[in-house]
Image (cartoon, rainbow, N blue to C red):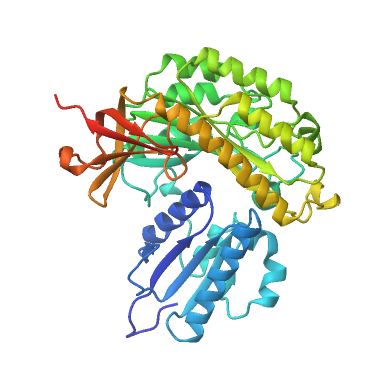
Length: 438
């Protein structure tokens, strides 16, 4: 790719989608730099002559964003602003044969498991000696740690297995090595991610090993917070709660994607559970970990969701009062089981239902936050902006959850440090605090 006498190549990686894609881009960044290729991530300098777009193919909005990004860089190539454009990730994995017919002038298309092939286009090789090492692109004090790839669940609406394949757990020793390297690079908080965290270990150890993994991670010196994401509720390993209760550096936080609150809809979604079983699980979790914050995600507008069934979900949210909640409008995905059903709920109705749930959650969140006023919390400072420090409690994950806002006038704080604060006021999705001096 290089010619004699010309300027060396510079690569910019553009990442779209979820935290799992962030990790994939970080691995790509590490491998390219390990091959002595000048590489940046999300560069604002606009000086890279090669662009690699790591796409998302999860739902309609994400797919459109990926397509728009590809088109933007193809146009930049045609204008002579960049020389080469490569596309990888979920959208490329799933729709490569179709999209490459429509979008010309892309220099290469690669799937989610084809990093070695992408590296070959740079005359680079996949370096196994870099296994467990990763250059991170998030703030230095927190890092995502992917413990498995793919998913074996049969959820009717989900195309993840089509893009990511079957579930493959990363051996415990590899996870521990990677965690230790992240700590060496400054990480104080480790966020465990996977398509399905609760399935961890079943494929390689023939039993659920998430609790054992978390227990061993908690032994690593320098990890102050361990945060668990994407724990599938069906088959949830209860021993995880025991580990959370005894290990002080495991956050009282659980990302538990439930998707719906109606037994009928859960059956249509092929979730393998009922509302009654779901609520029983929530009750057990809260009993064993009284201070826990549960984050969940829900889907509105799935085929078969009548107005009556939607009201069931509203009741489910009202009754269970989740500390954190996000909502997606159903996306009709080809080659999924739900695609065989008629997508009868209009986009307008989906949006109305989404807004109704979020309005309800806003009330719940504001009430929960109001109870925190006057109480003390340990906060991790993420950044400084607009004359204030922005941090999080153990009940909040980066980007998606509540933030704690502290005026810089109240004292100097350092990004990446922990700080004891007292909450002075609260809104639906933000807490306002003053540092406790001592």
